[in-house]
Structure formats: C-alpha cells, structure tokens
Length: 66
Image (tube, rainbow, N blue to C red; front, side, top):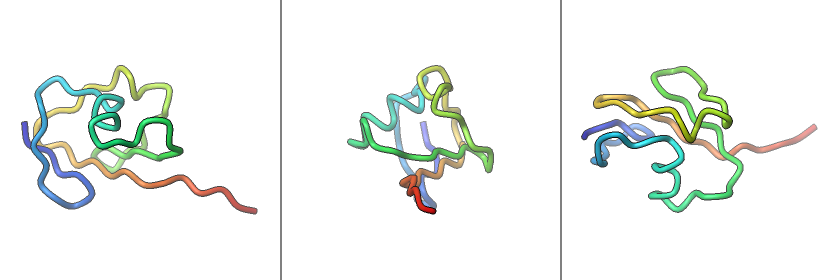
C-alpha cells in the first residue's frame, strides 16, 4: 500500500494502524502529533485507526512550552 508520509511516498503493508506505523518508524513512546488527510487523529485512536491507500500522513514531534 502506498501512502504519503511527511510529503514523501512511503510503501507499507495493508491494514496498518497508526500505532503500527509509528512502531515501524521507531517512534514508539515518543510525544507525537499525527495528522491524516489534514485531520489530527487523537492518540487514543492510534491503535484502531486503519490507514488507507493514498492517505496523506504527517507526523510531528509534540513540543510543550509556555
């Protein structure tokens, strides 16, 4: 399956969840924000959100401040 990941073409297995993608990329346990097709996906949905072919995924490090 082909998705766009941070502006670059990326091949991954079908039926991949956001959590599985983050594991595959080595981002397990990091504070991240994930957007799919210009909509933020809450962390509580990462384990169940199934990516689809041609999805546009943006992953950014969450940075706190004040």
